[in-house]
Image (cartoon, rainbow, N blue to C red; front, side, top):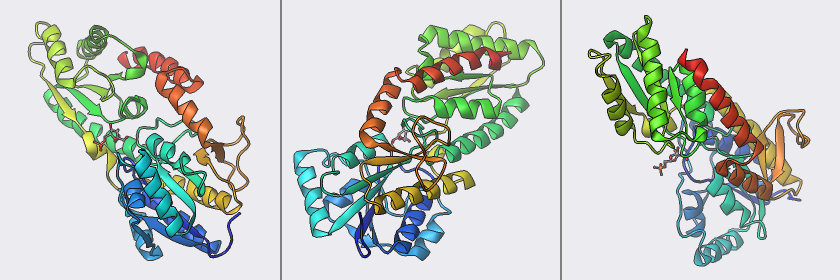
Length: 354
Ligand code: F6P
């Protein structure tokens, strides 16, 4: 259990996600209200290695919470997982008298957090636009990224329809097709190509060609294909192979590729992501105050196998080792969620092609 005046450190780590600042703001405000000294670690685990810990200004966080990125900075440290890195981080925790650490980040960041559970109380808050973490239905940043993709696709469809063109829009998500699929459905895509379905390159080309033939045999003036970056077939290759297949039938139709890249990761967080960050951070900070440790605060809602935490009916605290093991199964495609996603993704394809 934490006591008044204890130092609690906030860390943002891994790829930034819109809503991280809102989570920082909530954690700092709730922590201050509970009587703790809240400090921020600069640049993720790199800052923890180098002892870069500083006080947090609530007014600065209020402003930052409206913006993407993270006001603390973030990094993907290669030294942190090594024995030397672990020793240096432990030294910082001891010299800075950090009693608890709240890590806001994705899979790699939470794996790192778990390693420190023997020297401080540890809480994780899921943040990654990829939505590839288990034990939470949404991670911070997913909703904003989804909205950014939809907005980009809406703009692209305007010009695509004007020219009667085909657009292949590649989106981030690492090896997870969640972002591509959800944004694709919301944007009215004609085909969505995701890694989960496990199609060969030839079958992916077939899928896109079918969508084009259906669209241009009717009165459609554009074709939107949303492709996840996790699909191994390169977007330029996909375009070339599709062009070769359709050129005789549709000689006047051009295709273009747009890679949205890091555009998808920046920008002001949506109201949902701000609130998600705030609610997860609130629950995590209060659980730390009670002395709980080694958990991730996930967004799951009532009526699930694990009881919601006492502080929010939508927030479930799951042990970090369970989160990481289940996330590994999600990535391998063997977890219940992975199989569920694959089934739904397969069901959606023919519906979009109509
Ligand atoms: O994990 C978030 C993410 O944006 C992925 O979607 C993407 O593959 C990766 O990070 C990009 O990483 P970096 O910013 O290091 O290029």
